[in-house]
Image: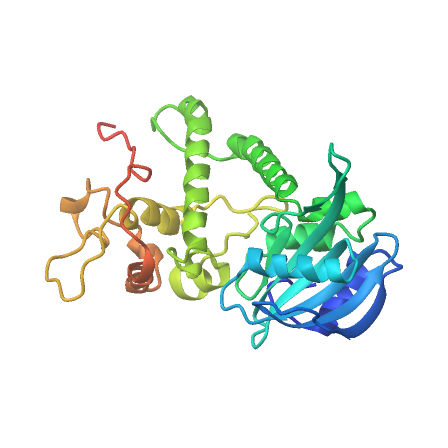
Length: 338
């Protein structure tokens, strides 16, 4: 299932039946009457059920113009209670737009209080949910909904949607990557001392990771152009001879660092560290490439102009959205004396 594409009921039901839910999942496309007025919900369709998971799957069409997770979930809880259901997978799809949708696990559990009364416990609508469709980050839903195969139990189903489990897994993978990368990457320091590289590798790798994570959040807020993370676009439009997966022999990728030098260094130290020139302003912005030896020691100017197919396109892409962040996170820490 390709979760970065617009919603298609037939494809999604096929995914549920043959890839995700247990083999006893029974497809049943039935329109459900809405028994009470709701603020958002326009139509509800039952897509099927699994007896082993005590689970029902619904498609809910809604008219919310925003991603109203809490409001939609509350309406879904009321609907589940009316249907005497306690666990459901719900596809929240906008009424007139299939481009993006939400796939949520919602549950209602009964708990006996100290006074002997039964109390309903509702799942957190912000916690067990995936936002899917065009433009979404594909890695996490692909890993937990596609790659792990069919759901084997109620616990397995909950963990596939749990923010806590996904967050723990993310940081474990990040830790594993760091342990591997710190042995491979090189950040030169004293040019005449090869042992010096290893001394600073850990510190430099952590600095790189924190900057990348921060930039990724900026990208999710649409403050960093998507093109800067699109390998195909970079190859076709930005960097000359960009082939990051080229093998230097039968086993290892190339050690060239064009992406780090041309894209990341210029993004970190020149763009995020410099104001955007206002349109019509005659004063030259710091957001330009170094032009001569007089610019040599100015770390806020961009470097590696010869690597670009169209240097001005790179600047124009950045100036549309990339903000000026004068917070020190992206200060250049070069040793000037050496």
